[in-house]
Length: 127
Image (cartoon, rainbow, N blue to C red; front, top):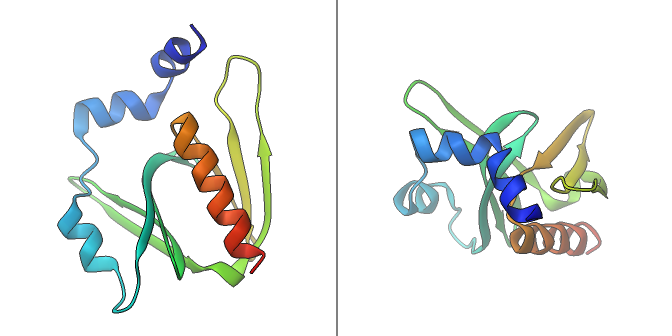
C-alpha cells in the first residue's frame, strides 16, 4: 500500500509518464569521460526538478534533457561535503547532499536504487 501511495503522489512519476525522461543511452555515453565507467543510472527529483542521476567511478552527474531545456551538473566525489538521509512515514526517503555552498535534496528515487545511490555516494566520498 505504501508503494502505491508513493507512486500516486510522486510528481516525477507523472512527469516521466507524460513527457519522458529525454535521456537515452547515447546521450549518457556522450557525457562519460575517456576512462569513466557508469556504476548507477537512476532518476529522481532534485530540488524540485526531475533529473537523471548518474554515478560513475569518477563523478556524480545530475542531468535533464527536455523539449525546451537541458541541464547538466557534475561533481567529483571529493567535492561532496555532507551526506544525510531522512525518511518519513508513508513518504519516500530524501538524500541531502551539501556540495560546496549548495544543498541538493534528492527525492522520489525507487527504493532499491535509493539504497544503492546512498551506498555509492557514502563509499565514494569516504575514499
